[in-house]
Structure formats: structure tokens, C-alpha cells
Image (cartoon, rainbow, N blue to C red; front, side):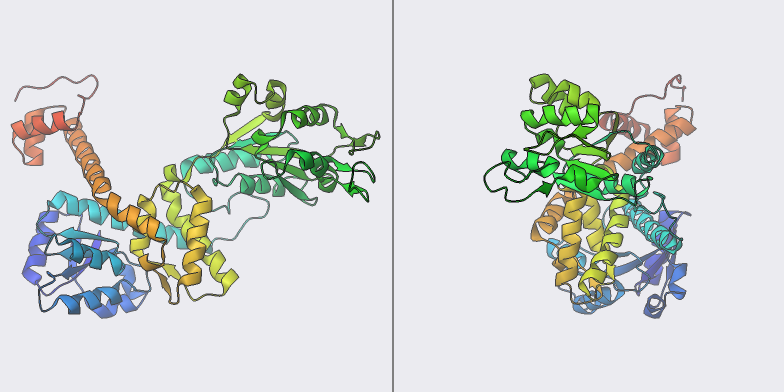
Length: 457
């Protein structure tokens, strides 16, 4: 890991590099290197020292930190702090630093910070590589995201797009169910015909029937002319029924008949018309539970559930958050003609910690808001909704403790496996006492490797 260090303490830098180990290459750097993209390619992470707030150099170093975090290559910056003062921590994060580390903390925590920063750097580089690739036509490969679960979903959706089978898309609100339906439509032979969405939950029961099937003139009070419904508007394209789990029971029967017989009648007419559209439905509700309670017809559920695709929430697709955020940034910058060109490392770190209860839709709203209110080239924490910033800062300590605990567990497991579960040898490798090793094994609840017995020391 190529780590550059902006600090006058050369001896301290050399000692720190020795203690971190051979995986980390620490070298002193000049500010000029980070103002040129080509020169900065030799750097993965930048560390800048920040003294205590009562130091005469504090304001000067804080201003330097503000300049460095705006480097054109987007290199993540870590603030190396001399104190645990929470105001200093707030100042460092508010300037746009990706993360911070207090000099008196354990080095293994510092290694975690550095590895996370390098991972961010690699994700940004992968994003640039993906942007440079040509976009294939009629393919799902251009969809933003690298998560393995989403990759499998898109591959499956691409496979079933060519068929006429009814598709049921499930998932939490805001996970992108309508977008997936549009992708299936655009990758099918029906792409030259309309994609017609219907929001079943937003229409009153008295109107949704006429919205779907249309009506004849005089069919009811106020029907002064004939009106085509969504089934006719879709023609040989795709009809997307969003939140189909909210359909009233009377309409469930009529929809079932349309799906079985592939015909329908306008309200006030006895003339059957062919239904040639493909049906794709979506819902955030648990339809099997609704079927069990009698709120949803079982026969309609089985008819809609020919092919089911479940979209995961954004909080389990952490690796996609950064890629999605950059893609949305480009979209909204072009739409609103604003100057923002990048997202600061501190904001990206906050994005990765936040649980995103509103999923992709909430991320869209956050990015659009930031683009509109940002007057400079970089989106920073002050452009975020206060709820997101406050949650991220308050949860930071607990998230950090969990990450440290997970790192310790992985390190101990690896040492035990490499030593053949010889705990004395593992303790020597880790440079800790055997009693400390046993204590950590109990604290971290590490089971013995399967098939291995403890060897005598």
C-alpha cells in the first residue's frame, strides 16, 4: 500500500513505517504531487498530521488538510491526530478527511483505517475504468453496480427478458423495482412498444378499474367520452403494475380473468378486446402472508408468480453505494447544470455507514439535494441532510468497535489455521502471551478449526 505522509517528523514516520510492517510503504511527500493527477497515481492514501487544538500550528495544518482533501485524483486523506479531543475529530471530518486515527491508539486499528482507505481508492479506480468501457446495446452490463448478488439478478433478468412470462419483482420500497422492470422491457422484443406503469397503491378503488380497462362514453356519471385504459395503451409492450399487493379484492378477480383469457372489456362495454401486453408486477408486501390471511387471492398470486425476482436492500449492497453515488452525481449535475464534480471522501465514508432505510430512492434524493445546494466542485458533509450526518457521527464509535472486533477475529483465525491450531505457535506469531490468546479466543467466540486438535506446546 503506497502511503504518502505530509509531516515534518521524518524520524517518527520511519518508526511508524517499521511498526506497520512490509505491507505498508510510507514515504514523505510534497503538497505539489497531489495537485497533478499523473503524479498522484503513485499514491494510494495520504496521511496528514493534525496537532492538538491549542497548538500554534493547528489552524495552519487544518487549512492544509482542507486543500489536500480536494486533490483532483480523489486520493483518500487520513488525519493523524495527536489527541482524542472530539472537537478536533469533528474539525478533521468536517474538512473532508476520509477518516482519522489518534496516535496513541493501537496500530492494528491504524492498519484497518489504511486498508479501508485503500479499498475506497480501488473502488474509485474501478469506477473510472467502468466509465471508460463502451455501453453494449440491449444488455444489462451497463447497469451500475458490482455487488455479486445484483450481478446474478441482472444475469437472470437478462435471460428471462426474451420470454413473455409474467414476472413478479419483490423487495423493500425504493430498491429499484420499476427500474428493473424497465430494463427487462428494454432488453425484450417488446422494446419498440410502450412501457406503461400503473401505481396501484395511489389510485382509489373507484378509479383503478377504469385506469386499467378504460371506459365507454356514458358508462358512469362524468364519462362524457370514450377513454382507453392502460391495457390498450400498452399494446404489445409491457404493463407494469406497481404495488400489486394493494389491489382491491374485486379487481383481483378481474385481473386474474384477464391473465387467464388474455382478453378484457372496457367499463360499460360487452365487447372483448385482446390483451397483448406482457405483465410485470412489483410489491414490497409479503404476498404469501397476504394469501394466508385471505387478503390476496392465492390463484392470482400463483399466476403472477411465474418468475419471481427479489431485489436486496441497499444496506446489504455496501460495495454498490459508492458506485451508485458517483453515477447519480453525474446524472443530476447534467440535469441541474451545477458545478459539483466529485463527492468528498468523508461523505463517501458516511454513505457506507448509513443504513439507507429508503434504499436507492433515498440515495437519489440525497445526491440530488447535495448537487443543488453545492456551489463548489466537491460535495462535502455540510451539503448532506443533517439527519444523515448526525446518525453517521453518533454511530461511528459502535461501527468502529465492530470493525475492530471483526478484524481481530479474522487475524486470530488465520494464525490458528496456519499453525495447525497450535496455540503456543500462534501466540508467538502474533507476539502475544498464550494467556492473552486464550482470553481473545473466549472474548471473540472463536471455535476451533474443524478436524484439528490442539497441539502440545
